[in-house]
Length: 292
Length: 162
Image (cartoon, rainbow over all chains, first blue to last red; front, side, top):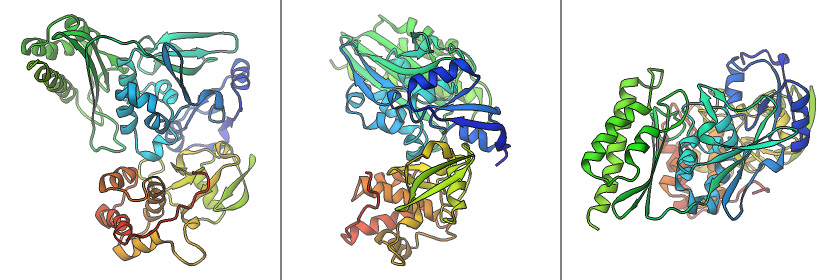
């Protein structure tokens, strides 16, 4: 233990109002499942001060639905997501993402809200959530607002989240788009369990009459935040999927990403592998559609 | 300092400590030193415990978050001095060598068997993906669990809250 423990505190409110009140009165930082923060704590890298545990707040847990969307409480764990039938039936990319995050012990404790708020560029669930046009609700004592997840990340570890706000809910729209839906989630890492990604790739494409009716590509570990590949999306949407277009997409993707060399991989490798993944999965879709 | 009540291996006890103290340390400080520290950052699984029936890394959980929880550690598996069938199977198959990963392996296997009483090899691999062994190798550990299936052994789960 490298941290000097007396310089920390952890308060555990049992409902959301209590938490929002504390947050409006004093300077505390949020603490959810702890699977990221306790690692920093152990290594002496966690900012000293007072933390607010959200773990005992049951209002923030669980999955529900209304007419237009599926609602995931921010304190819902990866394991609860994996086991949810609503998610399994409608949002397979999110299931894949939850399965490859850490291993089972992490999935039982880590939360989806924590994964979003920790703002790691290598986070596993945001690339999947971005493909479903997820929105999030953030609350402070007085008001709440609902924002697109794609606009929530401002820069490396910078969020559109005030110090007195809590992410309370993740919304996944039930929007139906006509056509055949294809989705692929691929995490490139050193091993299947526990690894942090070198590249995290989440692709959702809907094809109608050989035309790309919908295209979202969520990526992790290739830029300062998790991102949607907007330039590539512009190139692809409304076009007919062909070998030539796939080649163009493989070049266009370089405009969307800005990977770096770090302990896990190199910028060069990350660029190449992202291009290869796009090529590989789009060709699978092309093959599927060329016989019809 | 805080004082909370938990159930540790079926006994109600009080744990006293700093709110951020790692549950791993709180447990070991009671004298139950079966749970080990490996990496201290949730990678290796040596500190695995069952918390309200769920497999977790006790090195990543602060004491303040476990008020009124049920904890099961490796000490909670045997009945008195009689090893349970899973532990016996580890002995028979050479699933333990130096012993540091073994308590975590047993706890992760217990969680696995509670969910899948007759797990496939793939399910075993996924169930133990967060537990690292650095000496005997994972094959014998996997075989220790498969051995339970072969014997048609009935495995009884240990956690009441599942």
